[in-house]
Structures are given as structure tokens and as C-alpha cells.
Image (cartoon, rainbow, N blue to C red; front, top):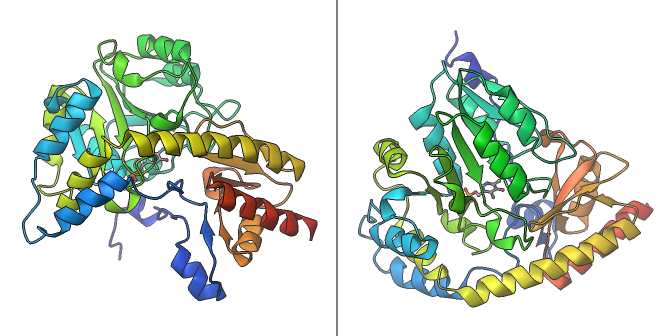
Length: 362
Ligand SMILES: *Cc1c(COP(=O)(O)O)cnc(C)c1O
């Protein structure tokens, strides 16, 4: 008897970074450093945390289903209309909503293996066929993607910067891509790490919405704002598209604590600036120290690096776990000899480098 359709039968669940408590419990370790999920090593935005504490007092009430105040503040912050914003329980949820709202099994989405796996999982979960366009030198190949568009293509997924490679596409390539992709095709442009990037030629996709009406930009409070555990992300898209997504959205998808914290975190320019600074220094540190250990690193503009070893990434992952350092093996993303390492505080980075030195000398 088949209980589920074949696309569900063959679906592999998302494997998250290993939680700190799990490693402590399983290995009997006390001091564990997690550099596995690109979380902010400085912790949550203090302003966000303060707002969250106040909001907890009111959790007997349902949240504002329309996220009115968060949308209003975001609209002001981003220079868009509130009607052009959708708030989600993490941007992961928004990706799922976009697929559910706009795609059917008769359509086709373009994804790139070696990018965020959630795009593929979401499409498969909804029975949406995918065309797969490989990365080129670990970066999105926008020319090949544009050339792969067929009459069935309805949605394209791109992460800029890309996770797990940390690479990015420049303004000129982005502009050419927007012009090459037909207007009827929706482009989901994922900027989860937008706030970390300091490259002058890195495009802010929000500035290009008039150039392609189907451009959908997603961002999150999980990374630089340090609110991953509260689950809050957003998309900026045309009011018409937003209205369709809103019909699919669950009535109370974003909890009241997350709404309050996210709104306050937007004003926390100090925390954001400090996070960006600590990350830039950490990226430089890892960029020097990892190659000294014989580890190859893909140049990254995000808050993590993809590190290549001369043995399976899972071996490195397991050995580092026993040293009390959690990283992320990347075989599932098509990088069997790699691990993704989140940039930590100077102390966490030093701990990683020491532990990795011991592991590699064995
Ligand atoms: C971390 C990440 C997200 C954010 O996910 P949330 O659901 O908002 O926590 C989205 N896209 C990419 C590429 C990411 O790496």
C-alpha cells in the first residue's frame, strides 16, 4: 500500500546543525562551541531581546495576524510599501508559501545544486519539477540559468551570497540576468546574508524591483539580527504578488514575541554594526589560519566559509565534535570533502583552529 505520493516517499528530511545540548549529552562534553548554522555568535540584538521579554507577558493573546506594526516599520526601513511585504515564520516558511502559491506540478522551477537545499526540498514536497543548473566555480551561473528558462519555467531560486559557498554575484551580472529572464518568470532572490556584505559591487536587489516585476527578495532576522530561534523572515514583492501569498499564509504564522523582537532589532544599528565588524575580522582570521593548516577555503562575503579537506567532511565533522566544536558536513549539498564553518567570536575561532589543528595532525 502506498500512503504517500512518490515525491514524498523519496523526500529526504532537512538535516539541521547539531544542537549544543545534544553534543553535550551524547559526548559528555561541557564546553561546546556551535559553528554550524550561521547564527550570530554575539547573540541576539539586545533591543530585540528587551522587546521580546515585554511581549512574552502578553502571550495569552493571539498575535497580530497581519503583522501590522512590524510591516509598517520594515516598510519605512526599506523604503517600500507595507503592502509589498510578506512576513514569515523564518524566510524558510516564505519559500514554502511562494512554491505553494505560484507553482503546480505542470510548472517547473530552476534550482542550482550546491545552493540552499530548502529550495529543492520545497519544490519536491509540492511535486514541482525542477531543472537543475550547476554552479560555476562555486557561484551561481546566471547566464546558464537564463538560458535554461523554458515555457514551463515559472520560478528561479538564487541566493546572494550563496549558502554554503559564501560566493556572490556582482551588480552587472545581476542586471544582465534581470533583463534576460522573461517578465512572467518569478525570481526568488534570497538575501539572507545581505547585511554582512561590504563589497561595493554587491547589488541590493530591492533597488531593482522596477526592472523585473516578478523579482521577490527574501531576507531574515535569523542571521545578523541574531533571532534565529524566534523564526522571523520577510519577502519584498509586488503588492499583487503579496496579496496572492497572503491568501495561502496561515492566519497566525508569525508569533507575537518574534514580531516585537524583529521590529525592535531593526533599530539596533549598534548590534548590527558590531556583528558586521566581528564577522569581517573573523573571516580574515579564518582566511589566514585555515590555509596554514592546509585547508582550502572558498573566498566568502557571508558569515561562514566552505572549507575543503583531503578526506571526507563527515570525518572532520565527527572528529571536531569530539573536540567540542560543531561544524556542518556538506556532502548533502554535493561537497563530500567539505565542511561549512560559521564565523564565531575571536575566542570561538581560536578554539576551532586549535581543535582542527589537533584533528588534522592525527
Ligand atoms: C539561513 C538562511 C535563510 C534563513 O532562514 P530562516 O528561515 O529565515 O531562519 C534563508 N536562506 C538562506 C540561503 C539561508 O542560509
